[in-house]
Length: 335
Ligand code: NAD
Image 1 (tube, rainbow, N blue to C red):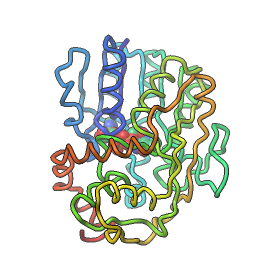
Image 2 (tube, protein in one colour; image 1 turned 60 degrees about the vertical axis):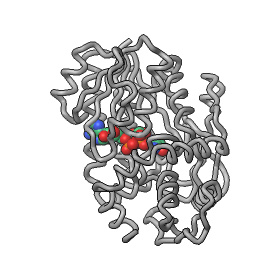
Image 3 (cartoon, rainbow, N blue to C red; image 1 turned 180 degrees about the vertical axis):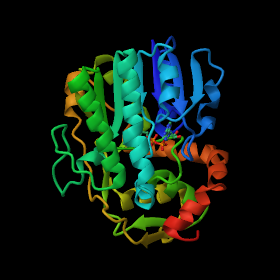
């Protein structure tokens, strides 16, 4: 089996590459990544000379480069490559459209030209928009994206659907809730709060802090994708969720308590424009039809994640010393 993972140097992609090499040691994995600010080959240092692993630096929008890759005979594609941060999509929407929509189309064309057995599009619950106090997103919930990021992901998803309907491409779309775990770039909520707290710096919380997200441990997401690759019915969408709804302020307070840091570090900042109030995933379809269940509850997952950031300070301090500093100041002001 030859598996092409796009965006495999990012947070979920690198966890997925490590997971698949462990679960399917005979699979040949090609990781193609443009190494944007979010891509980090350090995440994959432990397997860089693994005989079944190859890294290729290329942009998924580069049709000639993708053609050359698919010529090698790819069986499965898992598309993680994306611009993934909502705040950045508000600052600069254009690159979200080119990467997340046009990049997906380039991959679909190559998959159609050379033939594959499965194309999995890794998407997000954010394409469904926002929920009120009750109810959950199902696969039938209409798309109503509210940010340039989620709109671009919805655009990619619709192209994937269309290539199935029009050309019979064997596809699945997975839509997951917020992931957390090792190797997550420190701009995202959980690593942002852990790293700020470890540095004894302010923890910036948007609005009233009562926005709700459903948290999924990254390894549970990887196991769901593995199942979808092998057992997903072509053309189907599968929601993936952790059943762990928490307000942002609950998350922040949990992290502070775990690290023994004071709540006085919390600073409420101006809310993000178009900020979705609540996401909640109904993953019944994946559970009932493919027998998936998450292995991590939030209490143990957050402890493991905090431990990882404590044990890998070099990993994130190196990131914080680069261009990330400029981004942080633009977003939240001086530290
Ligand atoms: P990430 O930002 O950590 O990683 C994205 C990776 O894609 C990086 O390695 C980057 O270098 C690469 N990339 C970006 N543009 C590229 C291009 N044009 N060509 C090739 N590579 C490119 O993102 P993540 O958090 O790991 O998310 C992975 C996928 O999962 C994304 O598609 C995202 O929309 C989706 N998702 C993420 C979450 C989450 O909580 N992190 C939740 C739902 C869905």
